[in-house]
Amino acid sequence: MCTSKENNSYLTKKIIQLCGYFSLLLLALSFSGMATAQTVDSTQNSIVNQQIWFDFYPHYYRSEKLEYYGDAGYRTIVSNRSWSRIYARPSLKYHLNKNWELHSGLGVFYISNSDAIDQFEITPWQGVLLKWPEFRRISFKHLVKLEERWSFFTDTWNSNFEFRFRYKLSGTIDLNNKWSIPFYGEAFLPLTGKIEELYQNQGRAGVGLSYNASKDWKIAFLMNWQRSKAGQNAEVGVSDYIYQLKIVKKWKRLIGKQL
Image 1 (cartoon, rainbow, N blue to C red):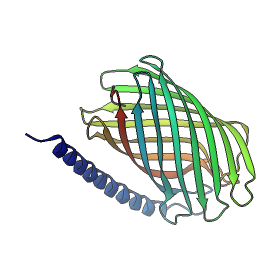
Image 2: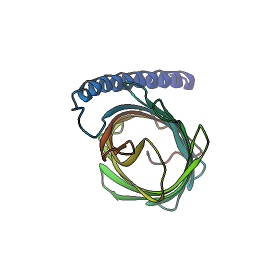
Image 3: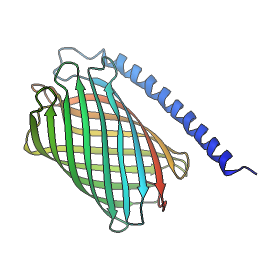
Image 4: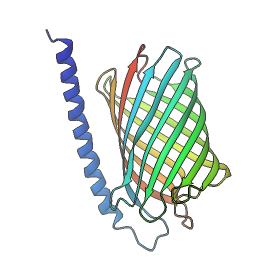
């Protein structure tokens, strides 16, 4: 009979192995995307970048109603590293009932630009999430967020402020107990104020493949497309293809339904 220690060791090795497979897939697709991007006509107004995102999502279930969660990670452009971002977003959610949740959090970002001044951003936010509709194999979520964004240029620490509205429709197609297909679409809408930034996001969408390594661990790879203005005078267009590796870890007094 296997001991708990042996089981944990096996699970850790399995997770490391899966991360390696997903990372190789991510790198292969990114290099393939770079080759494709080089064929884009240089006279086009839009700039197509290939980005890699590595993100870690911790969850801690304090009770049936209260959950601490968030995400942290690193994002960069593959070809020349002209832009990169490190960030952390500690957050809190309160489960009102089976379908409704209240969310709140704080985003902290550092954006490094080789061709522009670096930026530091602090973003408190509030949100409401609705889980609806849900079917046997597919489920949907609607998340509405209001963000208060303060952005600082690191040379003078002068700040800009903006209220921004975000709406995200996401869903999951369950293939079996281990594998699923996550997908989403998200829109960004500035309300008041204006932040000067190199990439002004207008919308984002993605689809991927997710694997439940255990009750506590999940690994997912997503392909994302981002619609934004790549520069102050650029036209809005698909400016980024994003290859994303997500790792989810749950700690709890309670493990509920798989997220």
